[in-house]
Length: 299
Figure 1 (tube, rainbow, N blue to C red):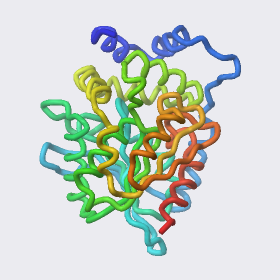
Figure 2 (cartoon, rainbow, N blue to C red):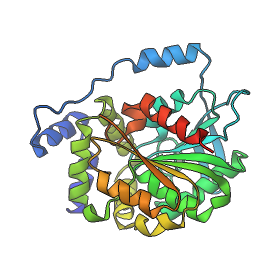
Figure 3 (tube, rainbow, N blue to C red):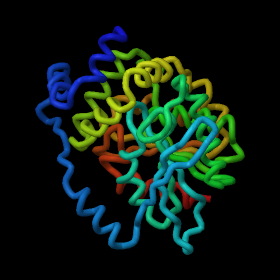
């Protein structure tokens, strides 16, 4: 798969990309996109109940990082929770899940190069993003926190957990990548599209918008970093308790691979959300939040 082909796809408009998706998949008639119903109403109900996120720009070594934050309840004694987005998308798609964690101090940053955060001179690999995350939590004044990542965000958190174990309470890996048995762009792209058939339709537009904002200058190197990064070598170095969780329709993070992730981690458990796909934080936020709360409540 050439870089020109990838760059072309990253710059495609929404409708063209969706046509490309349909043409590349021989769709099972039972597959369907989930219509994004109820999110706006849910958000209104949550905000009326006092669940509000403030946005801010914080200064780290390389520039300003955009972050969404919600205060915790005085009745909740859980550590703060930091949510890390995946490849090509900002922290915005973490918000359906983050809003379900009412009562827990929650932070959702856009990592450097994504969303409204600064763009480094050189695109950062997982190791560099882990170091940037360490700066972010220091600026936020969090001596230790729990961390949730989706997809490529799990690769970043694996590096973070191995490098800065003192900053970590527990971790949640949602649909961790990359399966070593499928470490080519063609394989990953096909499985992303196939998983997308079980996501909420609006996720495709959000991903395309954020990827276009990041641009090929960020996207192409990051795809290369993700495929080259041997997360399987880092997982045994993560001492924190980890919940590995996937959707039953997640074709990027298949069952066999997630079982291997849980085996490689020194202290891990595995759960499967029935009917879920790759971005549980967006399409199945309630089920994910319930699993996360159970995990965080365990001693």
